[in-house]
Length: 305
Image (cartoon, rainbow, N blue to C red; front, side):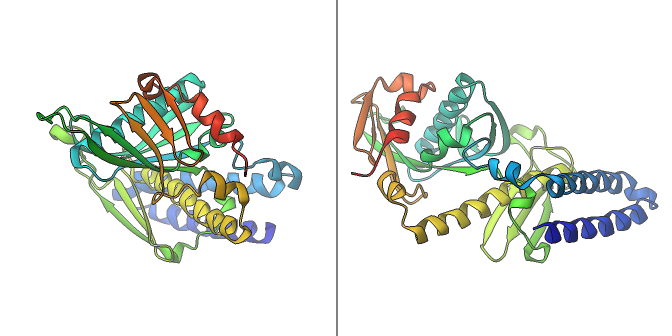
C-alpha cells in the first residue's frame, strides 16, 4: 500500500509543479492557487496515511463514523417528491437528536417542498452503524392533499446510505474519469452562477455519475463530487464481497439496494412496517419527526432464524 501511496504523492507533486506554472498567467492565477492548495492538502493526507501505524488504520472501520446519505423520489410524481422531502426531514431530525452534524452536498428540487434528489453528509460517532440498514425503497400509502376523491395513493422514494471513505481506501484511475463543468442554478433566479462552478463526474468502468453544485468554487465542488464517487465505488465493491461471501445476516435483513422495498409508511393506519423483519410500529407522526431509535434498534438486533 505504501508504494502505491508514494506513487500518488509523486503524481501530486507533478500536478503542483504544473499548477505553479499556470499561476504565472494572471487570468487564471486565482484558480491555479486554489488547485495548488487542494493538491497540497491531498499530499498532506497521503503522507499521514503512510506514517499511520497499520493497527490504527484497521480501526477506521466503516461502521465507526460518517456517511453520505442520498434520497431520491421514485414512483408517484409530485407525491413521491413530497415523500422524499419528508424522509430527508426525518433523517436530519434523527441526526440532530443524535448530536450528529448534517451538511447538504447537493439538491435537485422539483417544486415547492418537492425533492427529486438530495445528497447529505452526516458526521458523527457511529453514524454508519446506525443508518446502514436504511438503504432501499421506502413506500408511502396515503391520500394526497391534491386528491379530492380521497383515494389512497402509493408512492416510493429510494434511500442509499454510503460509508464516507478516505482517498486512500479506494483506488481511482484519473483516466477512468469524465469531467464536466456547468453553471449551477436555483429556482426563482436565486443563486445562479454566471460561471461554470458546478461539476459532474462520470466513472466510466462502473457508469457511476456524481455531481456537486452547492459550493461557489469549481475546486470545492470537484472535491465534494469525488468524495461522493469514492463512497459509491466503495459501497459497490463491498456489495460484491458480501454477495460472494453469502453473508447470512445480510440475507436476513436485506442487501439494502435500491430495487428492494424495505419499508411501508401507511398513514391511514398510522403504522410503519419493515418488511425485512416483519415488524410494525405505530405513532407514524413521531417516526416521521425523527424518532427512529426503535426501528433502528430492531434492525440491528435482527438475527438469522
